Image 1 (cartoon, rainbow, N blue to C red):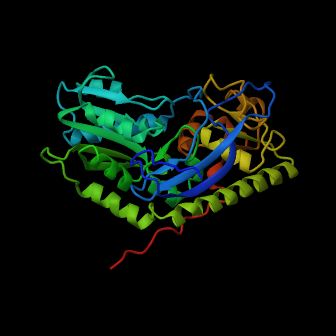
Image 2 (cartoon, rainbow, N blue to C red):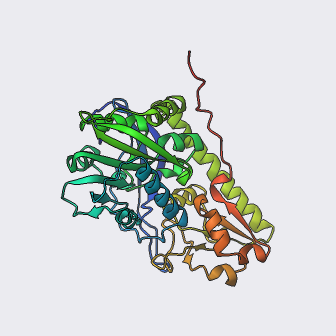
Image 3 (cartoon, helix red, strand yellow):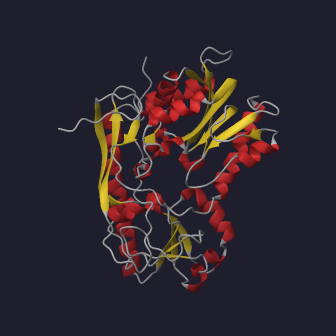
Length: 381
């Protein structure tokens, strides 16, 4: 029997809580005319019993995703986050900053430079070390956090932004699990990981992005004002109520996956039977497992529109559904556009008014068959 070791604390006790079966690498987009079948790999989430970190069990894939267009919602959230951190007095005048960004794109350095901070290279000490959805891409979580913590200058701050596991549980976001994303942080687990590096979360801010993301500010335990503030305590209580350390709660995500996939197939089948055409919008990694579970091909979904030129002319992995340019919204005149990224709704409605002007409608893919979480527990005595 193979023994698994936690990516953060090296503990070996834990539970397999979500198994999405054999899935294609969702960051591999083949050319449209490239014959399949595409290679598939196990996609599973494991929950460490010791530190509570939810994590990708294994990943034999090689990252190679073409970068997508940066959504306006992500840009707006970054600006608001910098504003809040500035208001909290955590950005020292003429301070040094270094960023660990996501390989999918996006950066805060321009915003931080405008506030007077000086970017330094990726090995230098800095007053502000920022990780914006970067650390989750590290296979060795312990080493990744240790590297970031070691570079924080005396009196400096470590800022970590993450998609909250409490959000994933509460909203049934089972398809947040994907190859290349090695960790799914609860505030509880991240607090324990930080403690191992001699850091303590001081304050936190929540944002609506992706249904619920958190920006956590941490300082060294021995420094003034390093203890957890009210905002951190509130998030820890939310974790407790959401059951982020309960294998049974996380295991419910699998039944939600089945329900959502069946609802999507039923919807597309009914639209085809009625003679209506549906195309998608947003060739996102989270759409890959959903379409595979729903057994969707181009006879049900004729194409997926994406604003990234790097993805146009390719196809979704594990499917024959082509990725096309936004011009096809006018050319194809669909009856409905299936949106795979809910955060884009306001942006795409404003960018492509011709969709609704032609009588078509936008449909949120993730709302089809959504099962509200029953994992929230009543507060104890």
